[in-house]
Image (tube, rainbow, N blue to C red; front, top):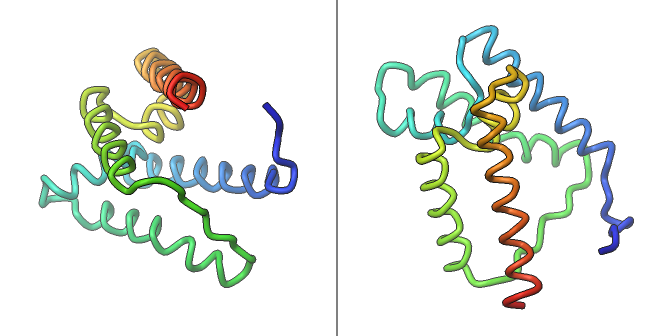
Length: 142
């Protein structure tokens, strides 16, 4: 394996991580809720009592790339592959987040920062599953 140094972006990646961390901390401090995107979307679809902050957070997630584009050159990602494969992957991720009581942002960012043992097990599980999937797709099937 080799690092693609022309597309290696440590500073923008670090900045993105800092912004996510600050956002998670602010949501916890100001609203008293954990920043888990699958739970936020699920609650938006099933609850009617706390729609405002959920909709505002999702609007911010979708609006942020457009704002960023105004200040920095952004190269859109190139996605190669059939849309059916990505749709199936999305459904599997959704199923996994419902079975695991959270997603990467909920467990990996917020749960680990709160030293949750359940989040540690969940994060290790989805990371190992991701590693195994990449290995199988690239070296066994590919």
